Amino acid sequence: MNHRLLWVLVLGVSMVLAVACGRKQVTQQDKDAATAFYQLAVNAFQNGKLPDAMAQLEEASKYNPDDVNVHHLYGIIFLGKSNGPKGGSTLASDWLVKAETHLKRALEIEPKMTDARITLAAVYMERQSWNLALEQLKEAENDLKYPAKTFIFDNMGWCYHMLGQEEQAVLALKMSVAENPKNCHAWYNLGRVYRDQGQWPQAADSFASAVETEGCGGFLIGWKERGLAALKAKENETAATAFQRCVEVAEKTKAFEEKRACKRYLELMK
Image 1 (cartoon, rainbow, N blue to C red):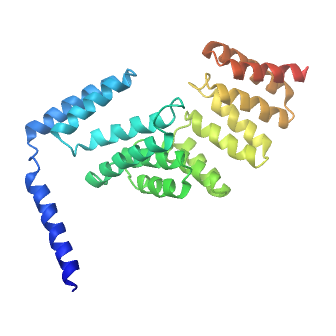
Image 2 (image 1 turned 180 degrees about the vertical axis):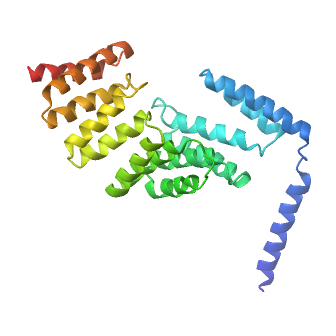
């Protein structure tokens, strides 16, 4: 072996050992403290107080740098920031890098953490890296005990659609709504797949389920798409009802652009 290469390897191993030896041993007390700060971060996050959540996560990391839940929540927050207001000093792509780093670390610590894998898939979907997202989702699907398979199949369906694999897309989305018939978003995605294929009756039926299923009545964009699909399927009365509902929901949610769009469709139908 080249002596210079041998020296580099020896030096590298020595540095790793030095870091390992110098690293503070995490005690059970440290882990408990990290968990406490993590719970404070969760509470702050759920109440929309992101700076407070980040501060608590930073404290948690001081006590236990390998707390898998802390890394996962970091990933969720950074993923959310990538969808935040534009014009800040940090680009969306930079937030996604941060999210990916923490989520990969979470999976290094606990490879069977399905929630972290699904969140990592969402990061890849934001990047439109559909194949990478599918890899993570297929791994998540293998978790037989995971209780929310409907969300896995929903995202798988959209990835397949974006890759032009329409049969797999429809199959995955049908599996999603079979798992949970009240998954408004999966019905909506199924409608979009049928819409993009020009299958208007099927699209209209799927969009109908997206807005008429219990708990889905406030799904604004679903009402708009329901109306457009019904028009294409020559169901004018149904379309008018959907556009009117779109106007009502938009008014309540102050979505004025969507309100104007749906009112315009109503006027064009007269």
